[in-house]
Image 1 (cartoon, rainbow, N blue to C red):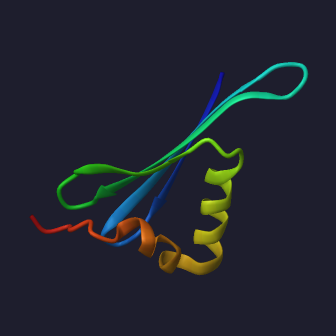
Image 2 (spheres, helix red, strand yellow):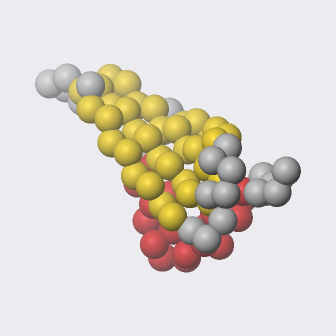
Length: 83
């Protein structure tokens, strides 16, 4: 099993993307991407999305590099940094 963690930092929140992949000689047996939004002020973490579609985590990271923080707007809706 291979686990890759990518952290995307912004002003108010950090987005942590954890991708777990299990492969054999034929191809991918198991894939899970977990996207966690963490408040920078309080440290509270919330799972925003889970996906079993291969490549989802890499796609999100690429979109954030291309579009900036706007790509994360859907993930942070309803997530208050003040509590």
